[in-house]
View 1: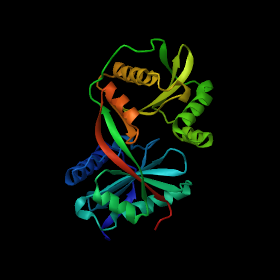
View 2: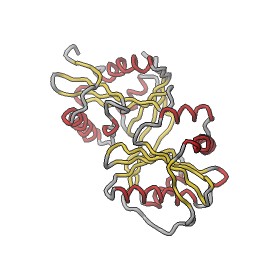
View 3: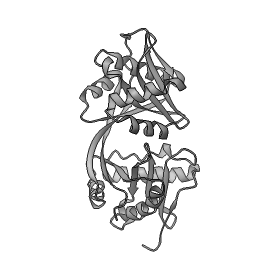
View 4: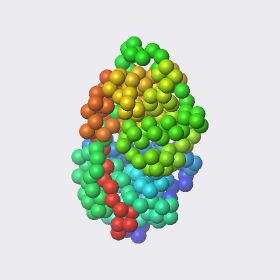
Length: 290
């Protein structure tokens, strides 16, 4: 293993990004999986941190991470099929762990394509347990229909909307307000827009859009106040966000995720024109595991 060189990714040129994409495609085809390591989120500023392993000139291993709350790191990774079982991912993780521990990270959350035996085996060796599963969806054909609430509007969040955003998100997702405030503090990067949904000028929910590149938008943190749920507001909010994105750029690739247990939300997304593209499992373990 002496010829394997591991270092932090600092070159985000087209050539370097192409090498990551090439490895991603190779692993995806070899495993027959829907692997996606978030290549579009890499970058020198406000992007995911990444570490690379090379054997000579060939990229054989990749790990990236980011945190949404300052305490848990979300991990994406892959290893060339011919170089597995050679501690490549472990060595990548050891280097990344130094950076994560210095930043106060306490737990690691690994994102693995469902059905990936190598990924699940790696998670087990890292003392990580399965905690949730999520469908990855993409908009295939927008299904427009007349809104139930014609007075509903989406407005870009203003400073005085912050308390509503925290309360709405906390109540809808069941998280504590303190955690939610930390989460929002860590997810205010440029390109991430929060829209407040107002019906008759009263705030009823919110939806966020992360434009990871000029052609890709990820919808997330979509929620409605519990007191306003079950009334059809959710579909109108989602439809308004999709229409706005398509109006800005008709060829926008719009993605979102939903936990597999949330059948109501899944039906809502499918009704708007999203389709399931794959399923991912999340394994959570300690940062200090050796």
